[in-house]
Image (cartoon, rainbow, N blue to C red):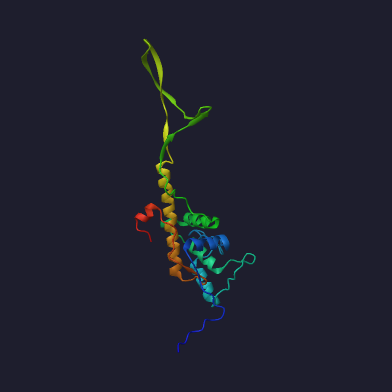
Length: 221
């Protein structure tokens, strides 16, 4: 005969979510606020809180706060507050406050940065014009030349079509660097939430957004 430990009444299984889904839940659904740390030379009570503050408050209560399924007024789920506090602690090596704000705002909007997957630069005319004959590239005069035409010397204009690269290679590289920085920041948040072990109703999975080419070349996480 096998005895099973009874499941405590009211205990609910944790929801398993990837870090991006957790961030969107915290900032978009629960409307968690990003409370950034006070600068070292500024003191103001009640400015914000970090993971340590949340931990101390829960320890003082000595019990789990019932988050419920629906928001009531300005109530924010405690797990969402933990997520926001973790994001607010973004280290300077990953972009600090600026990156914390970017991560929170993207999550609040439910957006993923565009790293231009599959986009390659194309050589295109700088300007085009359309008339009854269709669309044509705009040309400019770059010089003149004397040519013999039907027995007479004539001066003709030498025309050229200015071209450019669209999108510019640097634009693509910048988009991918920006995405990689965001991806690395999400990896740090995921690791922090797992190491902190403070989430009561949400379980952080190993799932991460797709890695951009430069991130993948570093081996990923």
